Length: 433
Image: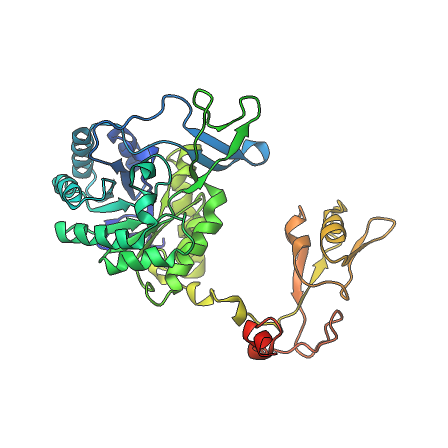
């Protein structure tokens, strides 16, 4: 079998699947169940110094559903742990003692004062934990108190607090980044400048998932009022993948260890994060929806896929996709494809025709017997038809060979990428004209 063992900034675990700092890692009982189920590590739910943290006693979650009530995303308004700090620390110490081969990282959030960070770091070190994660990402509740995303949105604060922590502890320091920012590269650069051993991302996206039209208040509703919360789950995965890729290909942060977070539900999700440079992944929503045992499917699926590809360890394919993430201007403008419909697989539903006729390029014809054909002269290869077709691989995109003439443009297909400097889409070219 493929070797799934992980060594992330010196923190070893039997596999790269960790539970993220969240309700599933709030107490000893949960974490023991998680480790018994096979998780490689946990990030303990965020600890603070304030003994008066009070969470709401009404609903804490708002959910976005797909077909058949499949959970696409969860919005939560829960704060950091409201359990006593000493209780959490005692539990962390016991669990780490009993599961020495599992990764135990502790998430932290305290006021932006050096003494506060120094105080809590000393307490965490006494537990034997493997590392800390600085929670600079939480977008609700705590950010209103000058913590969480309020720090993560200011690169200077990130660097400053990271420097404090690196000076005060020998434990690896992981900085958790907020996605609620215009350019993820700047906080990542600040974390590196502060000496961070790694970054983890993304934390939750600030959001309101829905409005109760009877109460006229956001969900979840507490006594007729609602608040923005943190959105996670499969819906945020595309946002997270892009941000992980941006850090991986940025000259100032390239090579920086990354723990990938956001919508990881299957082994394939995990493999995509790793291919974009992540050294491990953190999971929350999938565990909350399906339970801790989902990790067995993730481990088995990743191991099987790695064996099929000939990868002996996770590091064998880590970051392999990063060189293929590029700016739009470097895409091959002479790469030409056309949609092709497999008539044997077609169920004649007409979704491709409706989508193309109404909202795209009128490149699909429909005969009297509901046979659908692609009109090459109109097809711009947008692949909308592929995406709306309910039958997998019924519609595919076929590349025109070099030397062929594109029926739509009349241009001869070439393997040459073309001269971007002369292309009308190039801003410098347009400006020159």
